Length: 387
Ligand code: GLA
Image (cartoon, rainbow, N blue to C red; front, side):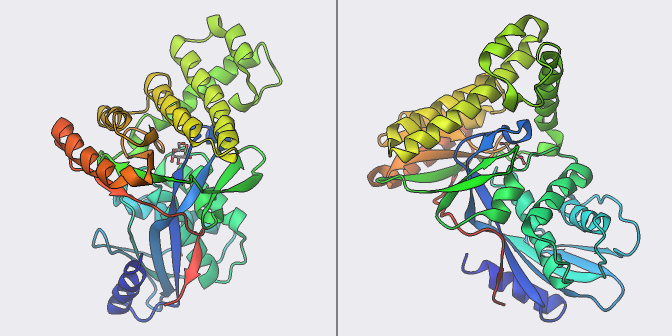
């Protein structure tokens, strides 16, 4: 991201004065494990080298001014007064974090902030967590609040629950905050234990293909999926009082309760139990450098998201079906919350250029939409950058 930081710093200087500090907050990709986080299962994300830059300084004019470079929109608010939800979409991510910091007891004064990003919004790369974490991290530094990364990432998640209205899991905020260069993170979303695995697919590379179908999780079925899982748990607890989340459920237990569950809830629960298993199988295959097996698991995971969890969309299914037919492809699946966004593809390096070219052409022919391809690298979690 050579230009992002100077661009945000320059915009800050033009509007206010010199920023006191600038933060880079990454988006994330996820190799496997979708919708498993709020079911307290496992995820395998990585922080990426694209994200959001946030420049801040204390304000001396009694108001907080926040400017989005990408939207060319300015929000002015006095944060020492009670905060209200805004009609400006991005503002709620920022205000939500300010609100959570204050609820956690932080003494904040008004501040000036400019932010901009190089991850497309609604593309499944978690621009929202990047923004939340960037704001939280920046204000923590600016006001010397002394909060650690774990506390900050939880505040980001709460901001999304309460101000934005998406009952998201912990994966996005966690990986953006705790990520490490060139490493994927296996996170246990119940204990929050995590470990790193080198992102090394030998002769194969990851490429993300953006369907350019934008999702909006707040108005999508995301929260519906979450409540369907909760419904499944409630029913199964009658037979298995010890279970607290789908993490505790095995297939034979689910099958014992099949008659008491609606057909839809049964399918949702089955997907989650099997997705956790797929993740463990993927990690084992990665450790053995069995990339063919990794790829097969990606294809299977996509099919399960399409038919059992029902979170894909026609354009994304076109992308995966097209990818399957290309030389050098090992696997492909939709990534992130669903209903649009990107697919993750594991492709042989020698086939990569042709792959991107053919996919772009065929996708346009079939859907009329232009495709964007990102060859993404894995970077560090949220950090301060030089101005
Ligand atoms: C969104 C949410 C995450 C997670 C993914 C799906 O990105 O923010 O918590 O549930 O969807 O895996």
